[in-house]
Length: 463
Image 1: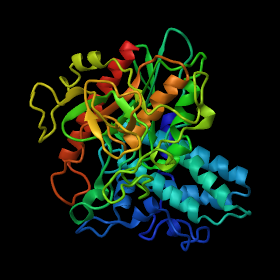
Image 2 (image 1 turned 45 degrees about the vertical axis):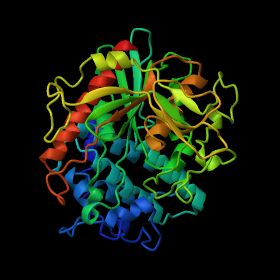
Image 3 (image 1 turned 30 degrees about the vertical axis):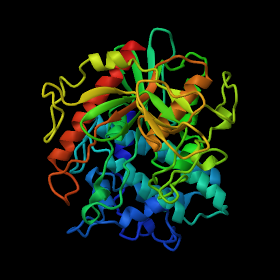
Image 4 (image 1 turned 45 degrees about the horizontal axis):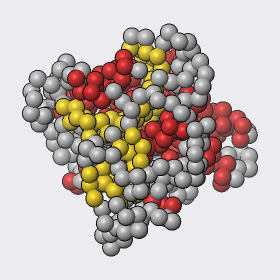
């Protein structure tokens, strides 16, 4: 009943957000003159030959169009910061649960988008955050307090406060992360706005599920650097790495890469920031085509979260340049996880008996001399002890960052549990240049999510 009630909340109010953002949702409570964030600014973007904002198509396509108007009405009635925080926490939880219910077909699947689509959660969250930013409260609210409320809603609507693992030695506990859509700018006529993320779809399909005696909880991460620096990952996973009756037996990060193969990343690099996040911010852009050095350059090194130092931390402020996966890689490859997965149209994996291949990627790129910009890519040997990292097998973007932070947290807590990163194939396969969704796109999402779940289940069996 809790799941169905959470879904029903999204359909209680009828209303929509206009092209200019959430200001039209409830008159008199929002200030349309307040600038939106970079991500919120994409709410008005349209696909070529389509004058409806893409975000509206995603929100209405899942039956979520009532969420933001109802949230705004409650905010308009709030009479204190504490009341507003309670509203945003409750509604953030409802949005996450509604997206999980839809992905797992718990209750009616509303709208014309496939149940597996991860994008409605992202765009509904962004629309709601824009409304919170433009909200005119009845009480004094400092700029920093508003940002704290936005972040509270953001974290809550990602399932970060929804992890409920059972206690006891007779069960296994597994936590899995996914990511938001990304690279939303550019493309043919601007059609990159259509992008989704199979890791996010997988997280929604796994959250709160059970495999044998393993209980699996999931959450999603933003594709931007500042939230990682503020501890989004550590604050979510850290409490379950501490000793106690609910300590996890495995912690897995998942993101999208390319091709038709799942890469199990062995080495994770501390270096980060070459590519821009969804907020268009990159902390460590190359200068004149030459990568910056990380020595005495904190913007190029992943900044650790002090409060998650852990008992095994030898040097809190100077973590290692590299961390390594402890996933049961050989078992994950041998399990033939793609055998029962339908191959999507256009799949290029050469073995037609499986959907996608699974490979152990042990390559990485390092600065052999930390004071010189020359880089060397190596494979099959561990990084040199005195080298500086440039990229792990999964690069130096936020997927690598999630992997580095997760495995560093494992090491800081002195654990040897399975922890590591799964890079999925690329999901962005459409039949046309401009349609927001189609059967081919959905087939790739379904296939990738199904095989990812199979891989997570192997880890759970081996944990």
